[in-house]
Image 1 (cartoon, rainbow, N blue to C red):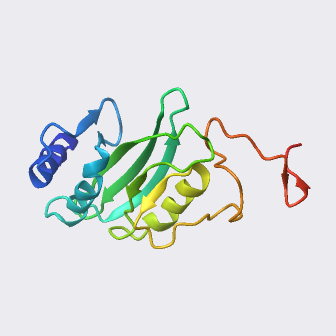
Image 2 (image 1 turned 45 degrees about the horizontal axis):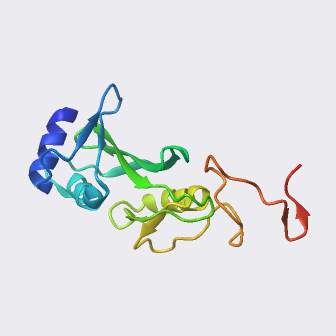
Length: 167
């Protein structure tokens, strides 16, 4: 199944005609999905005959910078039985305050268990919140760390529990 065929099938299944946008010149085929349709599209990708994307290979957060006012979640999926791949991009509003979390996006951990730790990493390093995540807490940094280090406007704290951070 080609990327264009997958897109058409999703538009039929999710009743989102004209809302899914191709990202040109990408490999694998990539679709931009509106945040409000993200969960429904992912459920259709996992559970629909002919699609059956059974593997979430990667979920990453991307900071598009303070000037853009946007962040993205990028999801790479594979269908092992049908041998096709797909990437999804979902844009979120980026908070002006670099220490503030983003608006919430639905968690995919109920669809693909592998999303659990990927979402925790995106939360920990970028502050992207995942609604209905079973255990959304920091995974790499201490629980009381201030800020999100992969944000483009991140400023390191000078000290952490009396230990100099900036060298």
